[in-house]
Length: 268
Image (tube, rainbow, N blue to C red):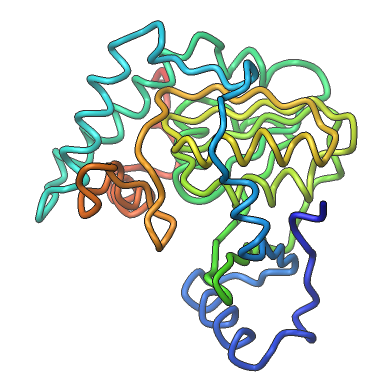
């Protein structure tokens, strides 16, 4: 089943093209790649089911992850966030990375690995973890855009050569579409792909696993905690309190307190 299509912007309806151009203006970029996930494709990717063994959930064996997630959720739902709140939020995400059973630094250091860390939270975390000093890396804008009940992902214009070994670094997985688009554009058939993230909805984790199968790549998802569900806007919310965000906008929350790179001499 075809679950995503690369679109040519010249074929977009005028309203959809204007929406894409508004996103480009807001993010000061140009999307040379548009990957479209239609409503039926999303429904199939997000369908209920058991998590496969390739989804490795740290909180199953390390309860301290849940404590960090509680901090993240508390701060995400504050009516106003101070600089200290934002710093605690960022540190909680970094702590979760430290609690993952697999070390992202070791995976990224393997020969022939391309590291992808989407803007903004993926790039910020990757910098803090010392992962973007290599030549084979990419920190793209990968923005999801609502389109006709589905989601369009705009990815900006520079792409590495397609990879046989790919490590993707991100903060959270909600719908999973941005990371699916990254895999679609970057991983060769037969590639080994590892995704590292602090949190995922069950729907997002299942979608990544199913989409990897359809791309014929070997995916392992290393995730701190799996919880929540998607709302109508594809944000992660608490099932028993749909108005309560689990994470909020991670990029908006941490970017004001995140330098472009760690200060010289610091330890990631």
